Length: 419
Image (tube, rainbow, N blue to C red; front, top):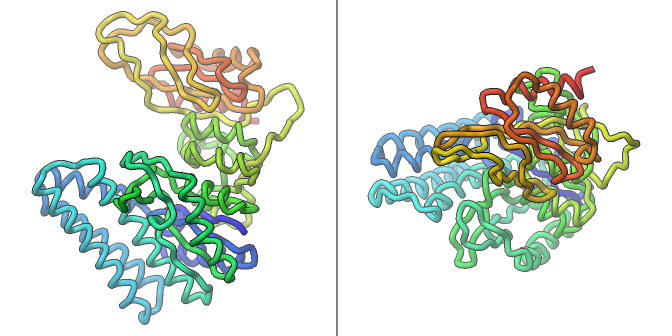
C-alpha cells in the first residue's frame, strides 16, 4: 500500500480537485490511503474568525465565516454535478453551524483557550474531506472515509499535541487496514486528532505531512507521497531565490535538516517515521505530473568531498540581551543533530534583537571547514553575529541581522548552487 497526502494548495480550485482525484484513481492498484489538509487558506481564516470573536467583534467573525462557507459551497458547485450538491452542501452547512456556535461562545467568554482554538481549527480538514470524498465517488473510485479523530489519538497539549502511538497503531489495524484489504481507498485528515476524552486536538502548523508519514510507517507502506503545488524540495526558497532548482534526491538526514532549518515544504517531524520504516518519501507537484519531484530515502553515500545540496533561511530568531551587552551567550539552535551552542556571538544590546539563521545543507557539510569559510566569505560585508558548526554532520549555519536574511540566502545560493 501507499500513503498519499494532498495539501490545500492542490485542492483549492476545481482543476486542482480533478487533478487530485485523477492521481488517486490512477494509483488504485497500489492500495492508497489518502490524507487531506484543509483547502487553501481555510485554517488561517478560521483562526482569524476565532480571534475576531474573542476581541468582541462577533459580527466580523460571523461575516468571515459566511465567506468561508460560501467559498466551499462555490467550489462544490463548480467541481461536482448538481446531484451531489445537496448532501455535501448539508455537511458543509453543518460544519458551519458548529463553527458559528463555537465563535458565539468565544464572543461571550472573551477567552481563546488552546482547547477552544483546536475545536475551531479542527473544522478545516472536515470541509476538505466532504468535498474530496464525493469527488472520488463521482469518479467511480470506491472510497471509505475514516475521521482522523477515530485514528489519531493524542495527549491534551492542544495546539501541539503528541500522538499516543500504541493507540494509533491499534486504530490503524482496526480501522484502516480492513478498508485497504477490501480494495477501497481509505480517506482521512491530517493535522487533527482527538485527546482520549474525545476533544479535538491539532499537532502543530502544517503537520499533515507528519500524519501521512506516521500512518505510512504504522501501515508498513511501500511509499509516502507528499503532493503539493511545487516540484519537490528546492535548492532554496524559490520566492527569494529565482534560480532555485528542484533537488532530485535527498537523504533522510538532509531533508530533516532542511525542514528544521527553515524549508517550508516539509514538516520537521515528517522524516522520523519514514526513516524508522525505511520508507521513501516522494514530494510531487499535483499539477505537473511530468516532473518526478524529490525522493527522500536512506543515505545516498555521495562521493566526497561533501557538497552543498541546498540552502535555507530561518527568518526569525531572538537573542535577548535584557538591555545588557551579551558576549558569548549560550544561544541555541535546535537541529536534528541536537541543540548546539553558537560560537563567536557578537555583542548585542537591547531587549530583543531580531536575527535570522542562514544554513548550508548536505551530507558531510557540517564536518568540512572549507565550506563554512566559503559561506562566511560569501556573506561579507554583512555583520555575522554567530556561527554554528559541528552540531550536525549535515549542516552549518550563521546568524545575521534579520534584515540581511534574504540577501544572505541569495549570496550563498550563488556561491554554492548557481552554475
